[in-house]
Each structure stands twice: as structure tokens, then as C-alpha cells.
Amino acid sequence: MPQSRTHFAGIGSDPEFLFATFNEFRAQVIPANTIITVGKPAALNSFIGTDNHAATAEMRPGPAHNIGRHLYDIAYGLHETDKWLASNKRFHNVKIVAQPFVCNEPLGGHVHCSFFVDNPMQALLLKYNRTIQNGRIIIQNQDDDDPRLSQEIIDKLAIYWNNYWNNTGNEQHMVSPELFGTWMDYLLSPYECAIQPWWDRTRRNVTYGGVTGRGEKVRQNISTPKGSKANKLLYLHYEYRVPSTWLCHPWLAYAYLGLAKLVMLNTEYITTVMAKENLGPLYTATTPKIPEFTEHFMTRFNALVKTGKWTQDIRGLIEIIPKTFELRDSWWEIPGKPVDIDAWRRLL
Image 1 (tube, helix red, strand yellow):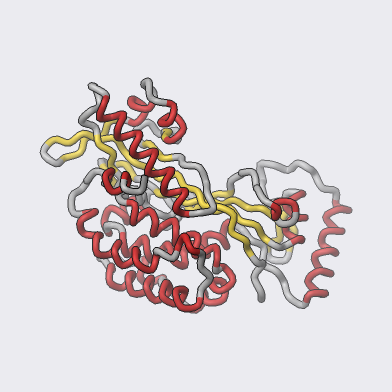
Image 2: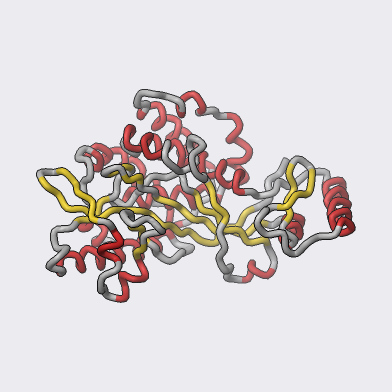
């Protein structure tokens, strides 16, 4: 069955980090709210927040169509934050730390994707807070039943759906949070397992991120679409919550964000092939399986290198992905190792 064609709009993120001091290489967390609530330049106020958790901070860069633009905003936010810490007498020894699990704090690297879908039927259903599940029209958001639909309207929608399916000869899939999560999993899930430190990653995954049933894998968010497609196509904005934080180095950040865009450019291909490869047994492994996950990821990635759709801003993945595996040991060898601010500053 053909997949509804997606049109990438923008990439966003809210990666998490900690503020910490160090005593003989041991990190001691400084609650983020004690730093964020004191006087800072306006630039910092727009870049960092606590997301209702006092200890953890998160970057809040603006979304962008171009990955380089988004990375620049993150680099600027980290630069300004580090510069302010260094100039403050109270916090001048505080460092920015970003690893999957630090001092009992799980840290995520949530990735947001906004896109348009050429599916008039889904657009009509969403207008009335409805979707199709197992051939039935159901309420999509149980917390929001407005506008209320009469049985007459529901019957008309059902007739319209049946006619649409019969006339086209094929059913267009509804793009749901579950389907979006499956798309993202195709590249980002094996990459996450291959590149992040095994034990800290698995410890975080059992806490949240939807990997083991704890927490949400995907959230549906609200944002305002831009461009000519906004008046013609259905607009969706989803947040993929599986990744651990990737702020430690700009190459790792580029890998995660670039892979997410690569997925959105190739949803039709991924929908076709994803059912043919099963990594289920690997995900239940109780001992590190870094080489196995790396092999599976590279097989999928290289297939897209050969036949996938690309844009110029993510072409660098072909060079950067191998480098992330070369640097993997140096990133994770010291628990609580600070973010490489100097590497981020080179993007400015």
C-alpha cells in the first residue's frame, strides 16, 4: 500500500543537560533552577529552561529547515551560557554536562520534526478530532471532544472514507504518532544503541523515552506552519523522545538531527523496507552489543546513501557518521565529562 507522501518542514529539539562542579573527577550536580532563576543576559533566558524538573536544564533553540541553522543556534546558546558561568563569581567553576545518565539524572535529546502530509482524508478527520483505527472512525484526543460530531456526520465521514478507498483502490495510511515513531526508529534507534554508552543508555531507557514501555516514545505537539504548503496540506508536528542527550559534541548533534531529517525525506522507502528487518532480539540483550547495532545501523544508512533522497545540509553525514564512532570512546570514557564547548564554538 502506498504511503501518504510527506514534505519535510523543519527540525527542532530540546536536548537536556546538567550544571555540575567536579571534585577529583566526580560530578556534583548544581540544580538548574538555582542558576536559571538568577540574573542573566536576555539571550540565555530564551535558550534554556528546566521543563518542570529543578535539576535538569534543556536547550530551546528555534526550529529550522536547515540543520546547520539549528546547530548554530545551539552553539550560540551553549557559548553564551558557558561565557556567563565563567564570568559569574558564584558559578565560575560550574560546567555543562550532557551524558545519558549523570548523578541519577536521565538526560534526553528529544528531536522535533514538522512536516506536511498530502492526505485530504486525514486532514478532514483531524478537523473533527477523529482518526481511522482498524477501519473505524474514533476520537483522536480523548481530552478534547470539541467540536462534537453528530452520528449523521460520523456516518457521512465513514461513507466518504469507504468511497475514497474504493475509488483509489488503495488505502492511504494515517500518519500517526506510532507510525512517526516507527519511521524514526529505523535509523535513530540502532544508532542510539550503537553510539551511546551502553550501561548509562540502558539505565536511561528503562526510565523514560518509550523504549521499554516507560514514558512516551512520541508526543504530538502544536506549532504554526509556514509557507505555501500550509494552505494546501495537512501539517503535523511530532516529538521523538527516544534519543539520549547528544549535546556533548557538535558532530554527535549533527548526526542525530541529520539522521532525523534523512528519515523524513525517505518515509516512503522506509515504510516499504522496515518490516523486513527485525532487531527485536538485539534490543533485549543484557550485555553490550555495540558491533551488532553498528552493523545494522550502517547497513540501513548505506542503503540510503546509495538510493535515498538527500539535501545539501545533510550530505555531511556521510563523513561525520564514521567520525562519531571513532570519537565514541573519548566522549564516554569519563563519567560526567563536560560538554566540548570549544568544539561547539567553532561553529560560530
